[in-house]
Amino acid sequence: MSRGTRLILALAAIALVAPVLAPYAPDALDLANRRAAPSFVHWFGTDDLGRDAFSRALYGGRVSIAIGLLSAVVAVSLGVAVGAAAGYAGGWIDTVLMRATDAILAMPRLLVLMVAAATLQPSVPALVVLVGAVGWMETARVTRTAVRGLTGAEFVAAARAAGAGHLHVVRRHLLANATGAIRTAAVLAVGRAILVESALSFFGVGVQPPDATWGSMLYQAQSAMSTEPWLALFPGACIVVTVGGLTAVAERS
Image (cartoon, rainbow, N blue to C red):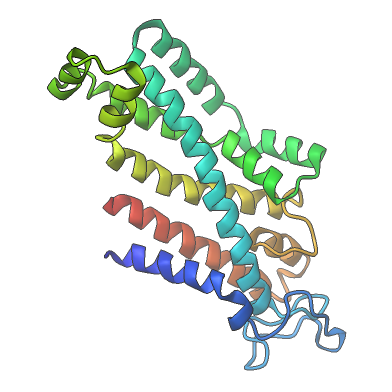
């Protein structure tokens, strides 16, 4: 097991047991200790309402990682479907699907998401759908390349000769032999989704208060960056470590 894998498993485990590890409730107010510096009492300090930043980082990690994972499921499902159809069918179907993929990939996705999120004022499920709906293109291109390279293989020809249908050939033979590339794309999709969610929350159009995510903690820390930099340092470090770990896992896949 690689270091990146161990790191991601450790972060996932910490997120799962956040209620046990957190010394305070994430929304517990302590107005007498507003914007306190990191200490043995408040490891990451407190925010402008006296809420414990360490507890909020733990609970925020649950939301950020959950959105990343679920958005990646949406993105990978769409990407695999489009990429497999393009790679297997070839011809004009391949051309149309890939040109559409390239066109969507060229769009300023963060801007589109910000407008959509601001319009819908989304909940966590809506964010999952939105982030996943604009994150499938990379997976589609990877899947298309992998499937395209396997369509001429002997085992595919044998399956066709045995009377296997198109769906069976794609699912049981082509995608089954392209799992390595798809797995790598899926891991990277999780990292991208966490970054996108963090960016949306940082701009104030993601997960709304009082719920915490790493991105929303950065958003709330903007006004105190010069005086209480630790309020941004710790959630920012969580994002960097998580995405870096996912990238390391993808590189070893």
